[in-house]
Length: 128
Image 1 (cartoon, rainbow, N blue to C red):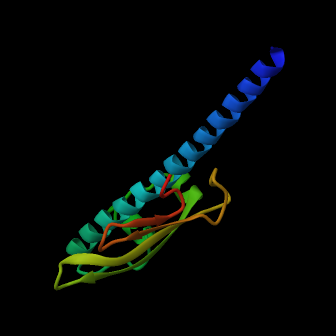
Image 2 (cartoon, rainbow, N blue to C red):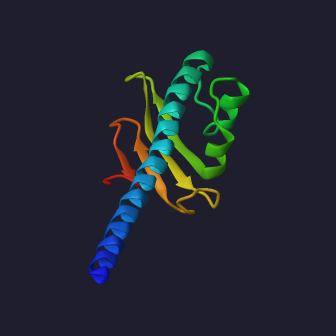
């Protein structure tokens, strides 16, 4: 009888650990997506105020007071912004990629890509 309970307990423990881990993946990638959308909005505002896109992904916007990023986010994710402002459409197009760093709980090298035109998010943590 004890043998069956220990097998059942171990199975439940393994299954619940798997769920918790996938939840962390989703939660971790959601943080990146949230910051990417924040970058998009801030870059749009920056363009409207300055008549040009920021020269980098977020540092220049921070200097102008157009965005605030938590240090924990800066430490956990490296952001790459490949964007332009489409004058005809009056919107930003391109992509923003967040890649996890050594400081990220998920480990380094995991990327989340956000398509600014379609709003589609692909990569790490998507599909869980």
